[in-house]
Length: 351
Image 1 (cartoon, rainbow, N blue to C red):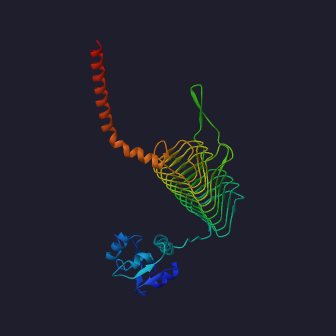
Image 2 (image 1 turned 180 degrees about the horizontal axis):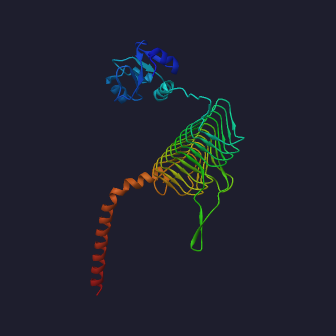
Image 3 (image 1 turned 90 degrees about the horizontal axis):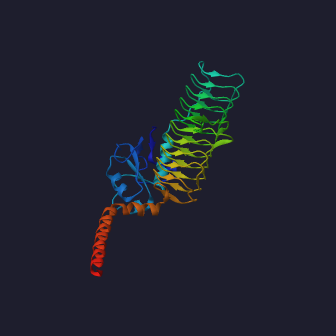
């Protein structure tokens, strides 16, 4: 990281310095790992107290938290949203994306493939006929691009990405290592005693500014396309099946699997290890908790959890009641025994 003055960082993120603006900052860190020269962030009173006791040289926090302090032992950088401010500092520390234009001698590019200005094609890359690469694209070593694919401007493909034919990727996307886009969907029909494979003739369309985590897989459609909307972010190890439609600005965590034909609206958030059944709709702005299983529609804006996924408050009430089940069963058994005794007594008295 370059060396900054605290006042320079304040200008960068539109914050205000309280204390010595000439404090040197040469790193960013968590409160637990901070050393002299680091800046840390705190968005609660608890973490602010810990940050002030840390070895960091400065603390980024909210103005209202700073006003509550009776003693300040370090310079403060005040911003309304410390988490966003800290993220801006991290972005400023990132190495700039450098694209050295050209095609590596070991790359295999089919005749007629269009390569845009300023694009870089790495070692052992294969690009098949009919494909087109936009301007400023970075394709790292060992990437395979099948026939009739399109890669939009300033998109980055990390090593060992595989694009099957008819994959369209928008602008400024980031596709991490090992991603496979456009493989056949998982479709078989039992004919007699034999599983017959369902052909998948469609493609995949990825919008602009989509990020796809390492080893994620997105299957091609049977017909039409599997679609990922602009601004959506997929974690590592996510499975998107054939003909799935995902809206814009969705966030899907690792180990999630979305079955064929499911439809996600805009702004959907899905926690890790969740599952969505085929043809199920998840409404815009809905949230699906980690390890939830959506087997029916999740309404827009709602939070569902558990399996089968239900409104989160209902699921929580069910979980809260589970520890009381053994005692309830014991009491039911006692009541059954008492009832049986009363019935036996009544039968005896009637004789």
